[in-house]
Image (cartoon, rainbow, N blue to C red; front, top):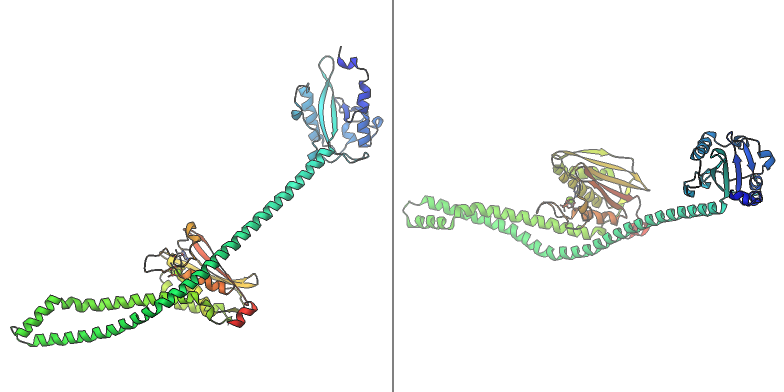
Length: 436
Ligand SMILES: Nc1ncnc2c1ncn2[C@@H]1O[C@H](COP(=O)(O)OP(=O)(O)OP(=O)(O)O)[C@@H](O)[C@H]1O
Ligand SMILES: [Mg+2]
């Protein structure tokens, strides 16, 4: 005896239950359509029963649906398969809501086989559950997740921008304090350098006079007979003092001192420029003219290293301190030439950008190591051998561009090349151009 027969009112349950029950036979003809189905689909049981499922729902994709039904038929007994493995006919996420009835309804449906006493699959039962609440909370959750994700991305971007702003602030603060230090140092060194410089020039004159006197002594020496005591005395003295060597070396020494002091003067000048970039006047100027004249000036530094390609765009005149901007161009171009080992190319580009203009200097030289990128704008940072670079070029350029309310940025790839990008506003803010 089976348990259905022990409870004959099983039919009443099928009629009342809050689940849709559809039974179809081998030909997909509906044999049973309970009131839940009738109410929610809007199709009365007597209309549904006797028709195929595909004629009731012409929009059902037969190619998709049939394999599912056949799969279940082949399984024979689904009672022992756990619910999450039963084939869902209509998972609510990818099926249109059940409509036509009194209310809009999302549904989940499962299929299971119904056996004859002999163990044959006689028909299939489709059970349809109202999943509207779950679906709605699922959809709400999805929406919330999406907004959260969007918010997260916005926040990330904001943090990025804050970091950038902070870096810029740090850099400009560093520049300001170093500017003060540089100004002080330049001022202190300037006086001693001044008199050393002038004394060395005077000394140079004196040495020349002394050399003339020594030459006179030479003539006197050779004019005397070989065994004259004065001649012997002079010859001995000259030998013991190594006058021949001294005569040559003293000129070299003076020359080296002059070169050295010249370099120190240049460094002091750079330090002064670095700290006094605001002492000049802003005026409208043609950037192309400035670039061309700068290229002429530093032609010697670059002509054996690189060919220069100009990609000039159409740009208006810019309110700037032209000589300072030229200095930026010069620093960038000379750096580019230094970065090229054998023979390379330097490209100078100009154009309009964000209501301002830009120029950039690109080279196909050595590139800058990642760990150096954050330091190249620091004063005295250099990778060049002692005596070749002071490491002031870029820090000076940076502060000049900043005084112009512009931006100086760099992108570089080791082994490929480097590009320095300078953006300048066309006009300076009102107060700046008036006061200076
Ligand atoms: N175009 C470039 N390619 C590769 N490295 C560069 C480039 N420009 C700058 N650098 C790196 O940045 C460092 C700092 O440059 P910066 O111009 O400030 O000083 P410097 O050229 O070393 O000395 P100087 O004061 O004579 O200009 C350089 O030593 C170099 O390592
Ligand atoms: Mg340099």
